[in-house]
Image (cartoon, rainbow, N blue to C red; front, side, top):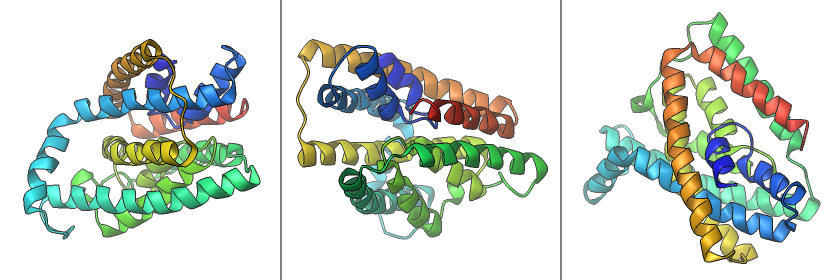
Length: 258
């Protein structure tokens, strides 16, 4: 399950939804145990993003003592403001949607399908127009922070992929493929950390055995680093519209099994 988490976390197919499905159907775990284990496995991929982008996060930590909430200033200020605002809005929107989904048993399969369709459409638009894909990570602005925070909050719906909605929307905002991936990876650290802590406080989690946690987190950490590296290399070496259509197709195919 740790290997699957490391592979699926960065693709636009809900890693938690697919992990729970596998654990319940193949390993015969009950839903409570599966949910608990999936939360712990996310800690491994969270650490893999921290390690892979350690230089970026270290520069942000060093910039915090002199931080000023002005997104038009230097790169570190822009990224700190972006991560703070987007995570705050994600927490508000995500909590409301989580409670709505919990109360009404709304399925995220429709949204999951829409993610795949939107990625395919984005890829086709990128192929046909040169106006998209020119912005980089240094061009992030206040509007991006506010919109991405709200959009990321929709991943609280069961089956909706956090990486899917953020990558797709960043592409529509005109970011190039590599920058869209990097920003989505960076956003995952505070967002996933806050989500896991919030879920633990709201629902409570039964801890699996220590050995299971260590093995699962270690495997998701190692595979997570490898998969980040592979995805970024693919984004650099091929036309991103091909990559976009490819992962959108994966999301559509996976939605058939939700």
